[in-house]
Image (cartoon, rainbow, N blue to C red):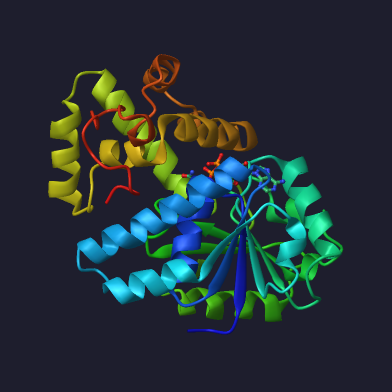
Length: 291
Ligand SMILES: NC(=O)c1ccc[n+]([C@@H]2O[C@H](COP(=O)([O-])OP(=O)(O)OC[C@H]3O[C@@H](n4cnc5c(N)ncnc54)[C@H](O)[C@@H]3O)[C@@H](O)[C@H]2O)c1
């Protein structure tokens, strides 16, 4: 177990997943949100995931209990004062993120690493909210964070070399693979994943196959661990739509524009696993990060 303290701000989908990764790796973890119900839901998600991991034999029961004990909830940013690393996973909104980093300036120490999990915003733009932009680093976890190995690391314009190195060491301690990329829209993965997912959805809409047959074709031909529709259901159709639109707005390339089927599914409320229905029906299954 490490004596380092990690804080995750934003207890939604990504924040709770990232908190699992931290607590499981031996860090005392503070899960903070402005909304007390979100904190409670986030803590429950983490505990459920750890208990489920023990049931599946992925960790022992004492390990799962110890990880759960390392976790605490918070609605007061002042609780983050002792944190060595703060990971921001709040709404994808530049002003909200800048405001948070400005507030953190007067709370955390001068060596605390400040990480942002933004998918589509500029790391440099977010860091400009802080008077310590040298220690702000983009760390883009893939969803579901507890299961996916990759974290994309994007230094901002003023990120110091020591902060980048310390960030990569920290990610290694989480058993993550980090790849360094540029602070550009979509980083590496979404730059090709979003257009590819859009084309797969368009192929479904054109009747080239069913949800099941296209997923089977992709897993069988490309060796992916899950098909694109399973993945989109985990990510959420609303999230795919938002990310695709934001990348389209910045890159002005039509291949990022979400196809009409996405709009129809979002309008119908078929958002994926989180609501029990997306491309597949999940009425009877557990909602634990696709496990
Ligand atoms: N969902 C994904 O697939 C995914 C993948 C990678 C990165 N991201 C990025 O991660 C971030 C979070 O996304 P999400 O899907 O978890 O969102 P979410 O809506 O599930 O959760 C966001 C949480 O932030 C909280 N919040 C908002 N403002 C806050 C503040 N000032 N202080 C504390 N908490 C605050 C909200 O109450 C909410 O609980 C976004 O930047 C998103 O782009 C999302």
